[in-house]
Image (tube, rainbow, N blue to C red; front, side, top):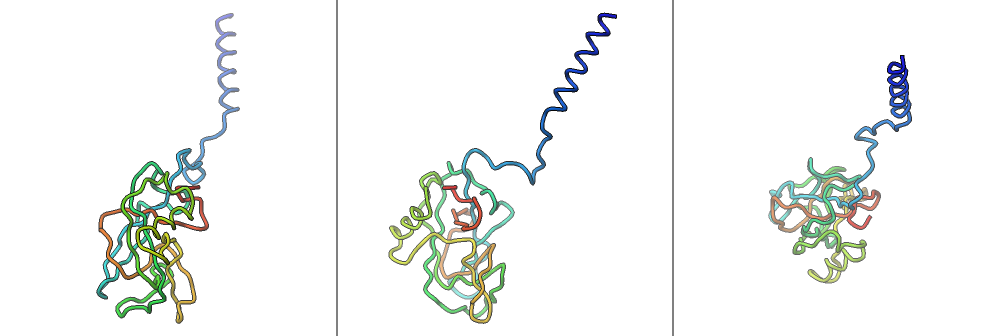
Length: 179
């Protein structure tokens, strides 16, 4: 009888403990990693219009929490908006706008060194000069006068290495290495 009583108490203790544990979070509810991460983009296409490139998100991109730990070392995607018109062969839309300028990549930099957007912009200026800044998720423009801002990718003038990921900013989510 004592053995049965002890086993019953142990069983009740385990059941009570399990009832007090929080339920596991689903992937959509999972908290972001304790290690800061940044969003990265890649080259999606080279344009039929000479000297253009489409950069943007792919299956590895996480624009909500970042997809690459800030301990990684990657080039920074830079943009200089010049107001250039849309080249023939490109039809801008919400998901693949025209950035109205030129893109370039810095030499690789550790994400932890990007402590703010200002620091990232300074790196672009350091390598390419006045008017250059870090490219941002919403830089693509579309509409009859390019009056609307889209997201996820954009076209620009420039040449970038393929099969490379680039640190890219996003202004409305905590998915930058400095967040």
